[in-house]
Length: 433
Image (tube, rainbow, N blue to C red; front, top):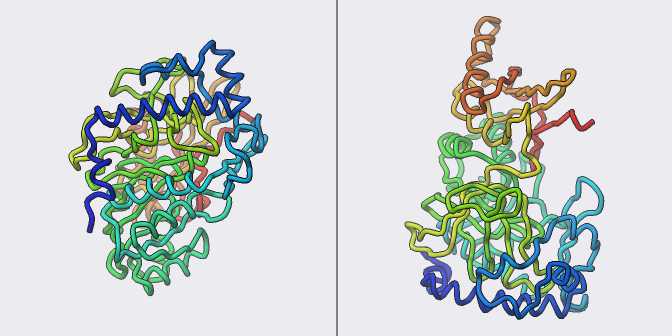
């Protein structure tokens, strides 16, 4: 099995990577200024011209791009190539207003595929593996992205998509799947269903790797998945606007490698100012190679930490550490910032707690309240009220230590909370209703 898909570029010296980034950034700015009415207007408003961009540090002179810009220019007004050069469209599901339309040239598809070929190789996958892709196909980018990347590395693909879980488990066994790509919540649900079918994924399948993403998940959830299913669980990252799933962790499982020859990263605070390395902030991405829909200083909305140190695996490209949540999914409860990932991290360390939970924010008069509904394992669920009350207090205490906030915990039986085959909805904010 290969250690690298492209050893020369994945282990390139930092000076070489910065030289590539500088050249591509200057070329990108010149291209969008000439070909995009949107960027030309935005640059003029910011008082910047292409000739002002001489070094990588000059990227901060450029204005930010936001998801709202993509929606305001629906469907294709931000494209930088004629539509006859676009070979594919993907559309993200918008919760409000217009969705986001992303176009791809042949070069964009090839770049996307190469990025995932590097990523999947970093997870130890390659020729001889059978990868079950259980992300959605179609307009959603997850399924087709992983599909092309898996075929590129020579693996066999089972294009399952989402749903029909019993059939998923049956084919996982019969076709000897060695890897699966899906959301972590769906893999947990799949494990539940397998148990009901009398099947142990750990002992009765060939599964060894899971490529999990599309929703935030904690290190504690990873440990639970790996321990109960006997596999290695790798984080994958990407957004529909950037192309789709693009980057994963390597075998070190210590940050997600982002390919510097194709993407330039920043991490900023809420005011848009750079944070110090090692501090968390909002991820900002400039796409250096995209042709149809290049994005300059795109504020992704994901909260992370940037790590520019060379990884133990030998790759020199920067890493983003585990996504801590969404800037716009962050709950503010009585003046305290609360991320769902913080709550998940606590719950997954408590043996009596099952895999599924739900966070409900509500208002009692003028006071915000936070309730966490928690499924309890069958072994821990008791008919004795005193036992359940004791467990509730234990969970409330552990949450308070981390959040510095009082929460109400409601215990429910296993199977009570809704299951999801795609992204799970862990947060319900009733204050917006």
